[in-house]
Length: 405
Ligand code: MLT
Picture (tube, rainbow, N blue to C red):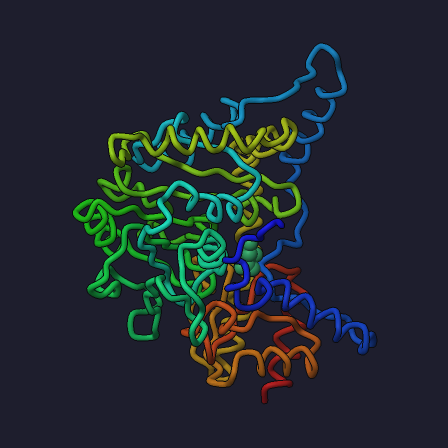
């Protein structure tokens, strides 16, 4: 008889956004009157920028022409895209990253979820709390944890994000158990917190001293507009020896439905005499056949002068939404984090997060994300996403204010 992976049975609830979608579908089925406004999952609403669309079309045309047709591409991504990434996202910021360290993929969610496959089952892993659930659930699925007790998995170390530390844990929050692999995400999902260069340097120095690895999720780096803040962990000296970075075109350029991302595994990282880059290359080329050519062509257009201008406008558009949301929530009297250098606003309501979720769904027909869905430390908070059209955001905040007043 087939035995299933018993670790899946430890998973607590359905994936957060699946549970939200279920509640929203139930509500919409019984309350069709007022259109819902979704500020829940961070899914973009604005169309792909014109220069991206032009390149996308060109890529499709080339695939329809015998002279230019391409079959399988390199699993790691086409050189034209990897080189554009290395130049614009890293060399331009003084980061020692080459095109050879870059692996193009179809999503940062998949990459952050899959990367743990490279580590031994008993690797000691630390995650922040609140946390993007993918880091946790994929380690549970891999059998790296015990059972869930009071919403936390035995065997995982949780670093608490609090008002006191501004939702930026430091290596001190690991306690005596330490960790071999640490997940960090800045600008943070869900709290919108950003880390300074000094805060990241503390992590990098700690990791290099311990021989530990940082898995750094930078999917929201495009929202960093403060020039003092780092966009990449490789802006910190020594990070190329201890950090893997995940990036995405989803939120940067509107690719959530088009799918393109990349992971950086610097050649300088060696564990037990093995280059981590070569191990990820082995995994990537065994399990993945590359992102489609037209999509990579579209992604490369993000780095053209027009692409940079257009994606900059997109980011500014969502950041203005974030500003509107944060200003409205503060006006009601709530403490807020994020919404600056981040598309997420983290709001302290002091009520049960799922109760606030249900109240806003029922009374305001607005979808947000309950903070407790991101971990114990998220209880009493909600996350409001700036990814929607400005008019809808303006209407949503009015409805939220009425529902909560
Ligand atoms: C979120 O809302 O947290 C994100 O959209 C999830 C994701 O990017 O996978």
